[in-house]
Length: 216
Image (cartoon, rainbow, N blue to C red; front, side, top):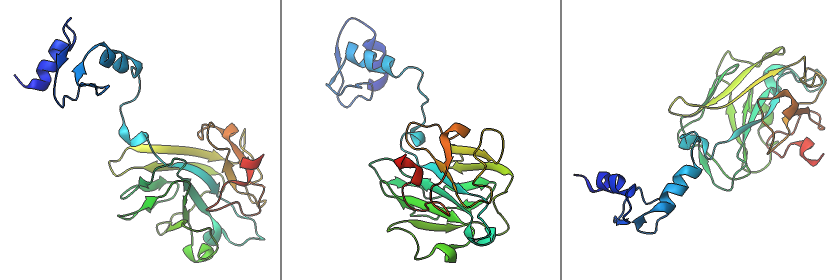
């Protein structure tokens, strides 16, 4: 019998079984004991998806720039943000539904940094804070001024984040052509909810930088 299987079978018995390099030794004390069972019980009900442990979040949407800023085809953007203290590899990930944008192999987001997915890279080139990466919408895709779905999907096809924004009901209306972008309120706010979004305090939003509303 495989020693790992033996460890699992005996772990529920009264004896404390020593298992070298046994993956069931969750507390890493070299023994499968009650501590491992307690640690497993503490995780009961959690979704077993390591892709969600450290994942960037859709943090800003500029779906209808004002006439003063310029045409939508130049200034629309979706921003994703890494709120963690570790670098996140998003090679092969992509933005889909309302707009399409794949992330190339070797794309990483450093802690506290951003990726700006925009209608026109040239509009924002040289205008963003250090280490902000630029990715262009795939040809023929654009953000709807009436609302739509934006999804972040990983390289295994797993949906990591989703925002279904709108310009009516509980959603702020100012981002619909009045100048502000739509900004996520930050850590602790579920970005799938309208109440978690505010119009930016900055004309044209805060691409590649902390959201202007985070200081409120």
